[in-house]
Figure 1 (cartoon, rainbow, N blue to C red):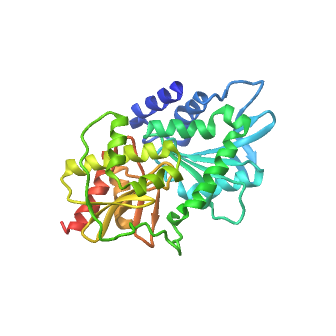
Figure 2: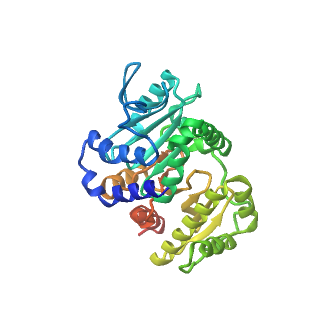
Figure 3: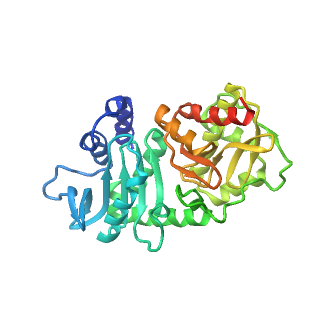
Length: 341
């Protein structure tokens, strides 16, 4: 969708102006333009499909998106770069209590999507999609899937949300809950722990050529599993991100060993995993072995926002920006700590 892509590109081009603004400014210059690009008309008095400050039990939600007289989706907004996790119970409760299937929490840059029609689950386990608009192509795809007005009207958005949450449960992503360690972590080490492959060096290439080269660099047992288990779009994005990671490793001169598994491609230094790319997230995420203190430091100093942190495994999980080098401080820290520098 060209309008949406251009809207996001414009926001990112002027993101320096958003660093110190309040919630209302983020709503005006980020959230509403994105909603308009997705087909929502916030100026139509006849339909009143975008209602601000919508009254709910125990408060008001920033926006209710309506079809006819029925609210179909709630959006709660925070200021640009505001950490979102501490606010997630608010939007989840608003949506659940009002019988609205999808709740969205956003600071304009990061968008969390919650499926409210589940009971007995922590709020963090109701997230079915996370978007960083810094990754424009992925943001466009997911925003269209869950927020395009035609998808909400037809209830495809709700159906897609349910499918995404089911897939998340099936693939065991709940292990990355930021506060609760997973008692049964997924074993993501390759079948033969002695098999170590040097990190593949990839030349610059066109997208399809890059995908083919990365795919061919991995053992077929894993690529076959990826392509049977995950959508074609997710596999394509995984291979592209892996190519970018491999090129960054080459550029920095890091001596790492590449070890793929059924849910990730990890990079090891001797017998320790330093970081890896996880395909069982949608979109794929970067997992980096650093302390929680270091993760918080890089968030403050370099804007490397942590999507979640696993205290049990001491792993930080990052949504991947369009420019992977934005996470270089984090990756460099992990590499140097493992090399003892």
